[in-house]
Image 1 (cartoon, rainbow, N blue to C red):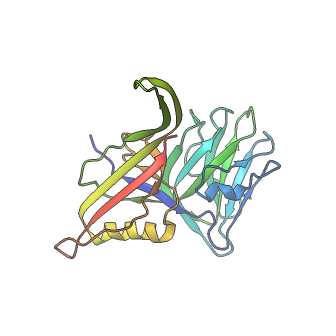
Image 2: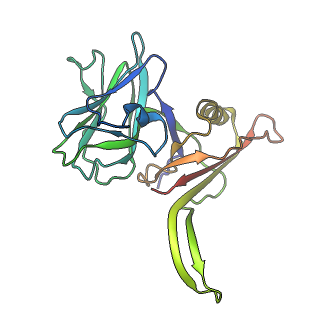
Length: 259
């Protein structure tokens, strides 16, 4: 069995300088399309109706192109409402030049969606939503951009480490009198000993550009394609040189709510 290296997904063209993002339908209320790339789960874009096709359209701006090789969506109802989705690009704002980056598909669950594809650099991009929709679609996070492949971890880690956050009532005798479960938290710790400058450069670029914001992590996407987590990094960034100053020991710690 061939295992893939861990990957992180944070680099997105959405929100880039000079760009615009529009939606063909937006519900009344606080449902801005710009919520799609703020990396927060507590607000969402929502359509005003079920009229299809429906589009989330990105324009990099005159003279600009932006590159992508992944799409990721979280906090949606696309499976429940019977939607079909595809990411497209164009050179003429979809007047005549319309290209799919992957085959359109219908999500089978309202869980995280990750699609990787061959990198393309274009000015115009859009997410197309079709299908016989039973309700208006919504999404909390929907971004596309360039993935970052890390390296094989050099220390053991548990990709399914979880901790249940709950209030548990106990009697004076130690009997459980009630349990109120709040949520389940994931933890993921990755260590790369004797990492070279290439890997450290990837880590530093992510930290400098994205900081403490949420990001998506796929610890092994080839054999475990559904294990894609929205997580936030530890506040500490410290990756010291080893005794051989050409290499570093890199430790990354992430925490996130289990979907």
